[in-house]
Length: 439
Image 1 (cartoon, rainbow, N blue to C red):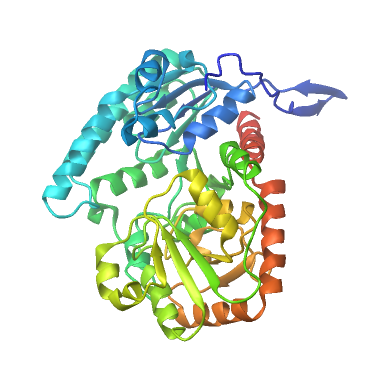
Image 2 (image 1 turned 60 degrees about the horizontal axis):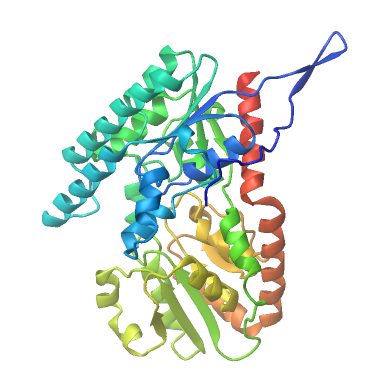
């Protein structure tokens, strides 16, 4: 939808006592750089604009004006995904950098040809450099002294120095475990080790450089904050703001019938996302193999790592694992409203949004601290240790035996998210941080 005539939500004025007179602090002028693809900083820009503080949004391909009219009649998934990036902003504030994402797509195909689609190469670095230079050029046109440059980690680069030359405060938005710790977390190391920046792939190295050169770092969970501190980042530079659920998801909830979990019989488990090692797929399946004689069914909404499916072929062949594949958001909401328990025993996340979405649907969760969740054990679900299949077994047995507890935890989960972790709550907390920066 077009939002040229969006009504501004006034930011709460910041005041300070000065000789008994309250002084209203002016709103900051904020430039957001969201990087490529559909990243949460698009939603962030929408919230900042709604409070009258957004000066510009820099991003990858975006459905402005003519592009939106051309694509609106198309059916292909690619067109739909691009249209889904639209947020409530006037086109005049959006500065899309198309070339970077085109180059990124080429880089991905090069990696696939080399047989390693997940590890970035020097071509990926070239792609980032193109974005950095484009962002610097736009920033010289729209940046203002004493303003804020809020940019996504890896997509800052040279533009961060440009912002500092203009007298802007720089805030790096980082939403995953520190890249120097991530490989060790994913590889199952009992005690994760910090690796050198020089040993990282180009994109991970760019993230670390952006973290180091920022005035402040904004992360989306306490877990991410902990990983940064472990890697030597000063705690004073790090601020935590959980994203929660966006308003589009809340609207989907309103259109669905009431929640319908089972109270006896089969325990319906749901997983959403890429079912692979980092998400703890192997640990979950090890636990379910231990419960082969118990009444459970696992639905996977997302792509499955072929290596996982090959290793645990027997479980998949028995029909107790249902492969939904990649699903629409509305279908995912339906699945969450029907599941008894959402499972994500992840080894490393930032703050998994699917957990917030499941909780908003009234579905309790089984997850780890490393998922970056706000869920509390025995209040909103079950928190287990990373790699602890035995704890998952115990939690699932508990869930099978006490369905009333699941219902109570589901109700607590829904209230917690809808009352404290919606998009507007995120925007309020972000504007409070900006207010501190301005003061």
